[in-house]
Every structure is written in C-alpha cells, then in structure tokens.
Length: 150
Ligand SMILES: [Zn+2]
Image (cartoon, rainbow, N blue to C red; front, side, top):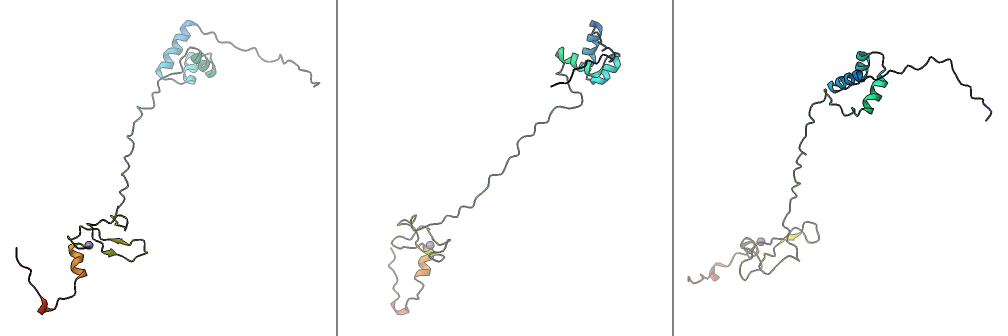
C-alpha cells in the first residue's frame, strides 16, 4: 500500500448516445435484417458498435436470424453394417450327440479340431459320407453278400 490513487480528470467526457425511440426502432429493424452491429452503428451514426450490441442485448435482440447459414442439414447416422462373424459350426466333443457323425476333422489338440457333426447313419457313428470312408476296405469278392431286397 502507499500508492496514492490519483484521479485522471483529463479524459474527454464520455459521450452517451441517447437511445431515442426512433433510434431504438431503427436498431431493431436493422438488427432483425441481420445487419452487423458495426453496420448498424454506422448507419445510425453517433454510436459505437459496442453500444449497439449492448443496447440490442438489453432489448433482447440477441436471437437474430442468421442470414448466412442455411438450414442445418441433418445427416442420418451412417448405418454401420453389422459385422458378420463367420460362425463355423464346430462340433466339439461336448456338442456331439448320438445322432451325429463323430468323424474327427483336424488333429486332436489343435484349435480347429472338431467333429463332422452331420446326421449319422442309423446304427453307425458316422454320416453316410464318412461311413464310406471308414469302411473303405474293399470287401473280398467271395464274401460279398447281397442284402435281401425288401
Ligand atoms: Zn461325417
């Protein structure tokens, strides 16, 4: 502390622009037209841009229509394609049932090891296709017996 506040009185007296009804009307008019505060100040004359803004705010004119911007385009949210996850129907030992082909595919212990899982032939552990592969051993000709036709 210790500074002596010295009043400066050499400043030119502040100029207060009086807002006459006519000028307020003009201000409203120009404002609603979308004129900028400085344009309005210039047009009205004898008033600063800040004074125009201040008055406009006091008059509640800040919600002015913006002449530049058009209607905001509402873009529909981009539809994101649903990630299609390939769902390989892997038949594990747990999902095997009596009526499923138990033909192992891949190597046991490997990640993609699974069972065929196709409907098995009645009385067989495998599907038709795998039955053929399982019993590929050519039957001796002499033992070939034709099943009786029903
Ligand atoms: Zn099979």
